[in-house]
Image (spheres, one colour):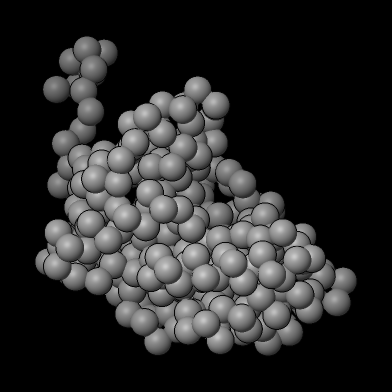
Length: 274
């Protein structure tokens, strides 16, 4: 069973990517929720059980930080599915100390990452919006990724990263960018985010389509899938195999322009609707 694909840096990727915030404890809600998530996914086997669902549907990419728990989970899922699942790794380093970036690259290589995108925490401070370019240090970081044999890109929360990377001809094959109907973590209005995505020179990996759980899946996925290009991708985090199955079906329904075959949640207050 396959999922529609695109090409990023010469690699064929499914247009849906498995996100990992809901595995690693980044809820964007509260410290209590973060703790709950970390306890829920306390072993690589528990994470692999969810990634495996994506893999069986032809979704061959996982995005996340350089994390040993995640790296082991991806390896387990690959073995269970019997296919390559690409690691879109988003490590970080201490700005001004390139030796720490080399260490991050070595870790990503050890985790068999296909892609290595400097994380937003180090990317966005090095976007020169006045000169419409990336800092020299950030461009060196990208060259180091390429020299290491991985595919470079930018993880960012600002659309200016796309504009500046394209304007200065930076060596990037894709960009990570928040995009959702609520405008959650989007630095300008969503119509402007969409404009930047449509004009980007390379495929965009959108993230947070459900605004970290603030938008219902049918609403959030319909908005994103119907407003990006065929070359662009959607990254979604889920907290169970059931949610993975549901989000995959909702995504396929959007792309195939058909009603989704998912069971609606039911409460007593909806009794009069049945």
